Image 1 (cartoon, rainbow, N blue to C red):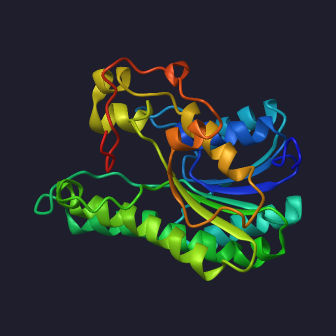
Image 2 (cartoon, rainbow, N blue to C red):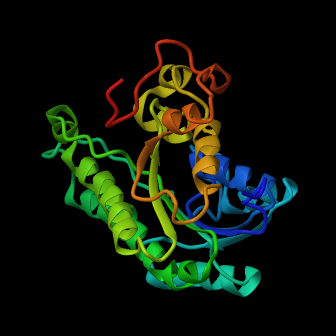
Length: 275
């Protein structure tokens, strides 16, 4: 196996202006990967740091080649532009990262159908559509990977009932990834899911879930980036149809001390994970 199988590969990622997506894009760039980000943040949002343009600048500084496509994973023409940009600029697509996701933990009667639709469109349809558009190129790639940031299917009543609207949207992403893995099992395309064991310190967690206190008990996004690199470094087609937690991936590399990723005890388990 090449010491750095990421070098020279081309990744198309949905989202990635900040948070876990940006941490993963940085890790790809540092290893000499080409990255195309399809993200909406053209101008800064007062509550959220970073735009697609600042992200691309960071990736270029790390030694990667990056392109930002301002667009929405809900819009088919925008997906087409992003994939076409990857092919036009870098000659193909090797890796898809389904990172874009909408979080709404409202109970069923409190969740507006407009928000329900948004989660389905971004999380489920966006994952399916971006992957689908890229499959002709992935089939030609010698390092074809699809990585979807979604949880293992935990069928406990606790998680089925906590917020069914969000559950359906996230489990839908996982089912899409598992379906693609099965459908393309003989095509040398890996399709796997990755999810954090604990909450991750991102703007979304700070704003929507735990506030400052929640962030203190969360690990840094780099734990997800390191786990993702491990998955994406495996030879294509050898490991597919898996739903991994970040700590499981790192443990197989012999990493069992996760304190370098921060987070004060007690760490807060992520949604859908039984700690």
